[in-house]
Length: 382
Image (cartoon, rainbow, N blue to C red; front, side, top):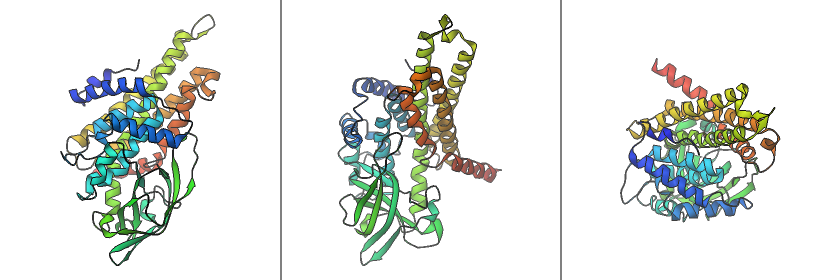
């Protein structure tokens, strides 16, 4: 049984505690799903999560507008990740994919949100390009005015839900100014002529990922989110909300690894006694527990700060993502070590966790980039 004492921390309200317990019970009954066909599994997960109401926090409720609750997003990701990494992925991409619409969309554009919150449409966030991953300002894809429309041309890559999404929020260069100030954001439905899936990408922890090609893909001017040139600000605002949740997913993976390790050392015997009696093993367990609690404090500090009305939590979110993802990698590595040969056996839970955690140190800002962000925030405040 995972440690739940953190729910008593003052970061949370009773509604958060109730949600965590209810979702944990739901996960025990519904997860994991069969991952053999990843596309089908993601569609099934989105449909199930939407059907049972768990996708509601991912986007604005247009009938009852209010800010996104980042603590709820984080608690949900942590809980789902502890049970099934693909379920966490399915939930997270619904939020990231529609974040720009929740924060900056017009009422017409936000009509998509009822569908994504109900699990009846799958969303995607199309920011990365072959030559501009973390360097967003170096984006090459263009959106050129053509009468009352825009023509989008270029490529996007490493796009989560690429190939199965119903709508993409796409960032492109409209040229109002050099660099970051010349980018804009657009809603692009999957059936848009000129948009194609150029390549499906396979990774060590199977998720639906793709490289997308835009060949004069025509969208109306009403597809523009915000104003021309607002794209970089929109992208950073979305990441400011959702970056903490990446740390929360890592935290879920780390908690599961710790739980599995505690069970392992209690039942496994070495030299005539349980592994748990060996001081070296106790040292590993202590380090793992310490890293989990420290990561949780940083993740939920960032989420609480945002929910309390902070305009930006760039520093807090970067710290949470960096620490939680890096430390989760270390916790899971220790879990593999404590499991011995079973830890590297294909299909074993800690082997799956080992593959799942690695990507979190790269996407939504690699660990090295987070260090730059933190340093600039700290020095700028000095």
